[in-house]
Image (cartoon, rainbow, N blue to C red; front, side):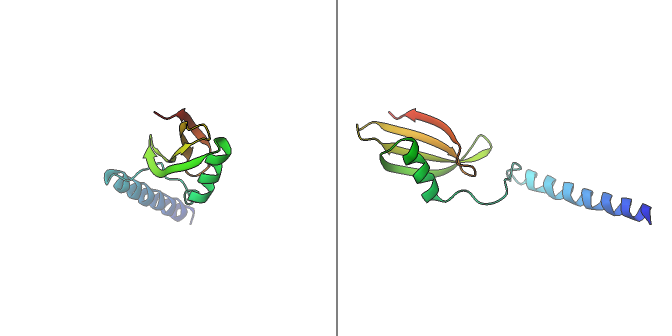
Length: 99
């Protein structure tokens, strides 16, 4: 009976490894994260909390193995800012003055 459990466990592990291998060979990102990216409204609120101003553009991008939101906004003084947030946690990754 114990031998059957070991064999069954091995079989499940083998199937999982095979599926992951196929996904990787087809170009799927293997650094998958559970859940969905934060909603656009949440990212917009976070961006305005860091840099109050008018949103110009928000894009969901894939950079360096992670999903990020890139936000462009203009502040009250007319300065453009580019903010990059982790799409799942909302963590501010980059804050830079625009060109």
